[in-house]
Image 1 (tube, rainbow, N blue to C red):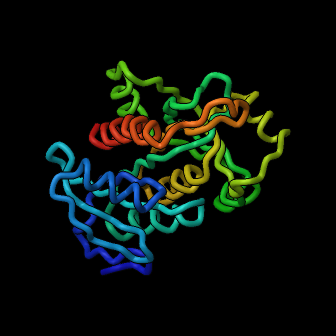
Image 2 (cartoon, rainbow, N blue to C red):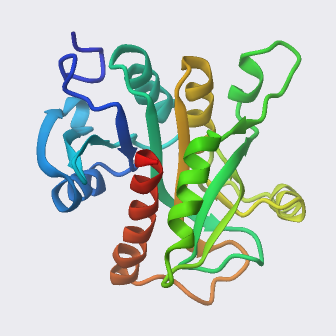
Image 3 (cartoon, rainbow, N blue to C red):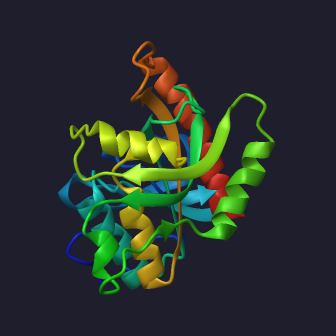
Length: 237
């Protein structure tokens, strides 16, 4: 049966899910990469398509923006639809001098100052991490790419897009944080809570400490395709 936020019937969502944030990007990924893609849910404009990738059933579903939104969809997919693996594919702002605009980040962990980190175990601030089998699959796929620069490391998951605290950003960068985005901690937490697997693969679309280069719209789509390929390979690993 349908959930409050997903209209698909049981069996209409594949065990493997690619999850961009943007609903329009989800539609484009489904159209360009899935064979036989069928729209199985469109509640509140958040589309979910199911088809196959290299012969394996796979779904593409948007998450919307932020921890609360991705947490709703990830929980319902894991808990009610039997989804086993979700890989978020999105964009981030770089915050390390080791990464450049156009690079790809595979997020090993997601730091956050959101309340999510303290909700599960009283008195403990949990660290949310990626699933190792997915991480290994992503890095195996990245190793075969000659046209991409791929990094592994933690990202910072923020609740506030326009909040710029130099002390926080500088401190995170000092301790090896590669980029900032808004969903990974929620996804990783839901996977841990529901017994699923999760990973995030990100394209660096801008840089907090270097505003000299912005990606063109053409570059965004070309380089985003690299993240999609890595994410799909991780799901299939």
